[in-house]
Amino acid sequence: MRVFTGALLIHHGFEKLNDINNFADAFVRPLHLPFPVTLSYIAAGSEIGGSWLLILGLGTRLGACAILGTMSVAIYHAIVTSGFNIYLLELLALYFSSAFSIILLGPGMFSADYLIKEIFKSNPNFIFSIFTHQQTSKTESFSKRESSKSVKQKKSFDFPFTNFLSS
Image (cartoon, rainbow, N blue to C red; front, side, top):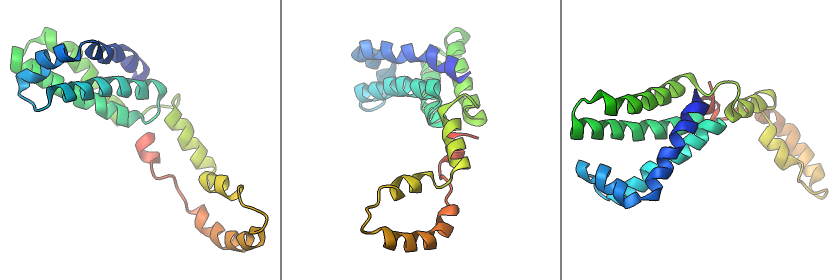
């Protein structure tokens, strides 16, 4: 679901970038929001960036939140300007519900988030091991004493964004 949502939504962001002033005039200015061109760039960026995050499965929930925010404003615009027109709302509602489902369910096993989570689950000292291999021989004896003291501390390290990246 996340790959299809990202792949189908990404072109909407590129269409906005093709004529950003037209998009700002047609969609942002009628809502009387400040800085319409800036907000148009933010909308296009969230659709493009959020779509890439969904496709790659990297920071999936963050990408889905960006898409959810953009779709919320788009749904609000459609209702304010055209009333409850199902033909205008159906695609927006599908993107909204897809992004909301991805936020709730997570990225799944075939994602970069899952790989990152598994790496930190199997080797919680992964980050510390990168830095400890770069020590010089002059401080080796000192670092061995310190590392023997801090090994107990390192074992309790848990990657803080594990719950955000993947369920």
